[in-house]
Image (cartoon, rainbow, N blue to C red; front, side, top):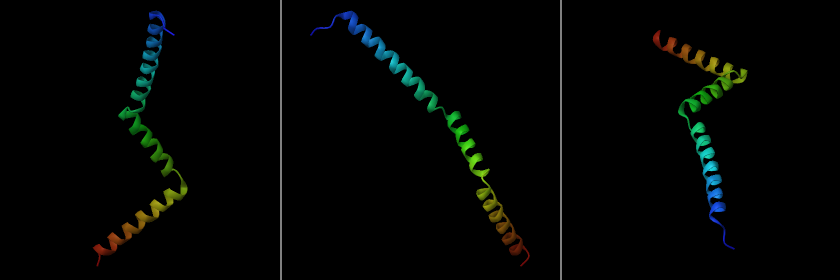
Length: 73
């Protein structure tokens, strides 16, 4: 069954519009500033968890004590 030129043209325009939307979405997702900001937010959320925060405080205190101990030996 043959399609007329107007139908083909309309399909091409719809496909082009869909492709443009997809490219715009990919451009937004791959934006380096957005990726960095999202990474910062994820890190802040992890560091706000008490279990992680107190573990890091403990590790920092242990490293500090070891450094002071080595300096005064």
